[in-house]
Length: 639
Image (cartoon, rainbow, N blue to C red):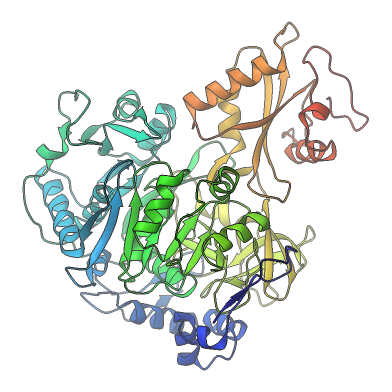
């Protein structure tokens, strides 16, 4: 049996120690036997030195359905920036999502205050085919971009798969975004239609969604009811879900591995969200990560609160269905006891979490008394984890391990994670992901145990283009090379190696922040806060104390005539963020300053601001004064 230790809370103390008998049952152990590896380190080295052999084994293991085989796995004729994966193959990746027995459960789902329901593999396939058929009936063609702005429901999964089955491209937009952000993403993607719910019901609150989409100037809309009947009046030309669904079936569009299937958004440092296409090969990366690193097997039940606007939504679909597992979808807020009961009653075997959510559970005691004994492992992503919170979560699940998982939309999955075949330290990673490699460099470009992390390409899943930016400039321009001449790929994370098979994340090297598992740039937040009355200049930074998720701290320069106090300004800023960006983004602290530090190139010195805030103890009482009585700090920062 594997063992767990709840007494050691040091970040370097393993809390999960797998036994040889347990290790032998894992998917990872199968792969080690196939290639003759005696340790994970040896297996990982083999997977990045023999990339074609590794990905061929993974594709065979996942039983990816091909209408025509590939001539080879990888073609690097155009270099590592533009690899061709599976040349000559013909497929529709959705076909591989229905490999489980037709009567087996594809989705277990439940609305808030509702009953547990099940959709079989046959039912999901039928609804997917129906969506694809009616897209064609409505005149949509191969390559058309169709947005999804919904909660993660069974219908959302069928819509997503149906769009891909028809040869169109799904555009994921988070249901928490406000009209401004929705409009930006619709315009960038040039979406021709939008699938949207009429409202969202969470915590007994009814939040407008169709209305937000209309305010964003959306093209044609297909509206789905949150309950049995639509609760909104549709624009002329928009369709209800029932009116849309008429034809029963459709032929599957067969294309190449490099065809786009999905456009997702991930914020950079420019203020505009990067539009990242996923191809038919990307789901292989999602499913491989889940198969080997989360040890997902046929018959497992995967629950991970997310939606199609974030990469973990499509990731969950492919991680589950390509592995013949079941998706567990709860249609409400995952912060209370009802979600915990869903995890219990759905007989969840893998639970995905965001660290901030775990902290909420722990502080509220809402999960006390539940039976989570069927959980085999927990996986955490989106933010830096608190070791204490993860220890508490492991105990709640009967001593099961937590697999930390870090990557990005432009990776299609992770570059560093964990594996249950090695000891697990709470809040830390224990393994680079199979098939992908990275190096850590210090400020001088030398190999280091702490510094900026660079990806060593290529890998299935890595993006090769952006809709609204120059891919080379973002990921490759000016990056160093390895001693053997191989080009590195920029990712932007800071990482520290703590010891053998143990790493921890240190946040972002650029100005992208991660708030509640959602990436957003400083520039996006600053652009809306500048519209707050009496604010002259503003800077937004993410801070972390190393004990959990990042927090948003805002530094503001006020107009000379300003007589508002800090609390009034803080309230005004929080309101504009709620209305213009995302109500999930909470300002942790507002610091009123006389001026903002600038670099030689006149860029805001956000690192100086972050360091000053930390130096002052991370306390509003220490860091803030009234905006009309600023005084100069000895280092030149006005606080």
